[in-house]
Image (cartoon, rainbow, N blue to C red):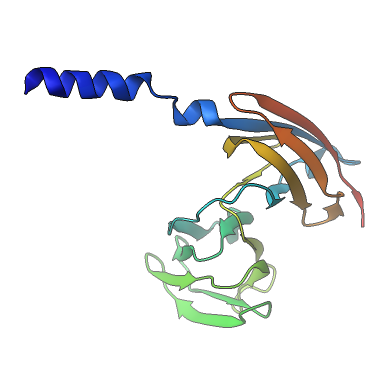
Amino acid sequence: MKFALVLTFALLLALPGHAAETGSLAATVSAPIAKHKAGAVVFVKSGPAGAVAARTVQLDQKGMVFVPRILPIAKGWRVEFLNSDPVAHNVYTIDGEKYDLGTWPQGQKRPYTFTRSGVYRQLCKVHDDMIAYIVVLDTPWFATSDKEGKVALPGLPAGAYTFGVWHEKLAAPDFQVQIGPGAAASAAIALKAR
């Protein structure tokens, strides 16, 4: 019995691994103003299919701002809206599914599950200068650029892809990339005025 378990484990190790069947994308975002390199959402528009697993993520209200300001998620994910400030906050949107989660005090949270893709501006009726964006996507493969403009999308099944880009202030055209098994593809994304 012990020999059979060891043999089974050894055979599993010898099989081609999932990592060898996938590749990655490393992209660099450029923008006319350096601070706009951050916050670009790069996502798969078409390519090999991928299942979207249910997940819960958080959007906080802290220091009188939404954190993070840009939150990409997959359709079907649940967002927990937290209030870490010592004052009451509200969350609502007039986009897509149009909701108002009400007003609640510090330490409490309100959940919402997104069922339609699109960009949802998050607003607060108590503090009208607060704004964030939830970008609801039809794919499990997406990433947001950091302040240096770097984007990393690991674990992509090998194949031909079309990627889209969303940015709060700027725009970029879709682009195509071939992802090879075990390979890292690269892309340069130039954001421009809309």
